[in-house]
Image 1 (cartoon, rainbow, N blue to C red):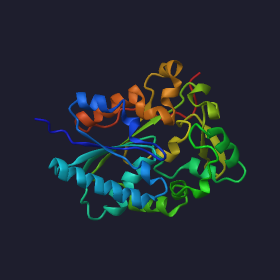
Image 2: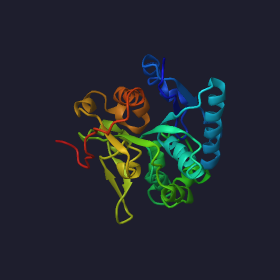
Image 3: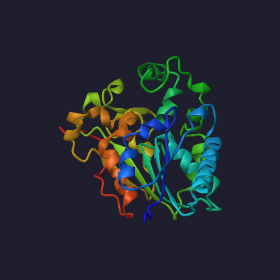
Length: 279
């Protein structure tokens, strides 16, 4: 009998459930049931609206399957913050949502430096130009994007997550990528680096990120952290697999997530975060 928790898969901003097409065959093989939440039709909606839709989806799947135990939630990018908003802000006191494990792949847990950069009057237009057709659509206007505005680091949404804090009845894991070899092909738009907000509030670039989300955006107190690749040689073979867009389909990420979902909860064994590449 399969006693493994169903995995709720939550895609990110301007993404789609198809990003899980490399993960789901492995979950099937490991006998891990999965439910794919699709919020592609909600691009103009805000965080709370999508979080409530995620809640309704989980409840519907419970009724459909008759399952009433805990679930695991696996998220990419902003999807992590949608799930966290449901669990920590909307359900934090009631704890009606039973969740064993929350896995975030490249999550902007502390707000998105990229969202802030999009709105920077000096740097924003050039950054958007470089990402047009790669990460944002042509003629992209961040001022009209509700999610981007809600995940600027100084927003009310990010403050609500920070004030709510994580839940002690949920295990948290974060999977990040780093350009350990300083390879430009890791994310060509920024020569292999990731923009982040410096301690003085200015802008700087780092190799400790996935091209879109720096580690400083992702780290969450109490969460297990894995920084990939475990073997820096993988960056020479397939650097593009480790950028933000490629992470959900990355074989190393898929293997790590499958391991988490099919096994007992154990401490993260990921390597330390590096801010400089190996030479």
